[in-house]
Length: 427
Image (tube, rainbow, N blue to C red):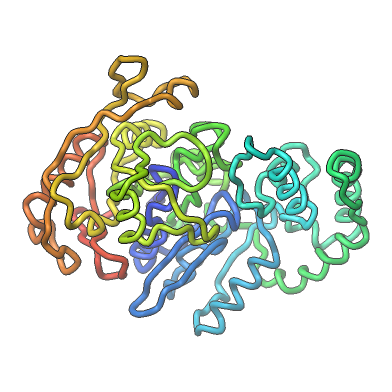
């Protein structure tokens, strides 16, 4: 059963879209299993750049069936807009499958997200304000709206009423906002039903049958390991499980069917939003990484915080995901540095720590311990094999591989589809 999980091994934005797209021509299904339109992938095909937020990257690969699994939260307006934009550019989107069990981001979820974040002030989490967290909260509180509810007006109305019973109290009495009318929400949601109907499917059945038929299924995480609600830098995390275990619950596929887990690592480190970041740079090097790497969020439009590679985080990602391989991206961005620092451990209260601290307080105070590796000046964007890389670039990759605990099987040397060195096949 060739089922692969591909996920971010840092704080997201590692280049998962490029990796998924690279494999897209060889797989039968690409599945988003968590998150919503708070994620973003940039995929470059020839001279065309595509920014995907909710759709699986496999939507750009002819012959591949893209799937939005039950673990994803879906904003119908965003989904339909994204499909329309791709159709206008000649991309066939007709094969998309959308789980009927996926939860809907309602207008009141977006409202609650925005007013709550403003209310928190200096204590804000740094959410995207797109209603993701409140939708997952509704799901856990069992007042969520699922895609299948759009096809039963009576059930939909009852569920919206139940959700707004409490939310309108909060909006009016705590935030001094106007109450939201049940009828208005129901009418807006029902308007999406016919447009989404061609895509709605029992995706759990489809995917399990595909695996039984030896089809290749790729599960694509939306954010990074350190943003996982259980295993990330809580509370500065997303509201779902982008780690490998999330693929099983978010797509309805048992863990025994997963054959390979691939972690995407950027050759340096970035994150968006608030929260601890031991290797973050506030100097010219940080600005250079941001400028050369084009480090601006695909979905948020916010500048990403930039820092040197953190091997402690990479080892942690290997452990909690059971990683079998790494895909190292953006190696080309590091061209031009005489020496490149790599964080090999932390110093906490005067002690050297080589594994991610269990305590939130300790991690907040962690200071990076760097090892200096020699840099290179040669252009590596045309490299086709590992041997084509400059010796110092080869040494850098090998050092990261040894520190991270899993083999690096592919290397990104540029943004293009063909600017990738494949060392070991993922299939």
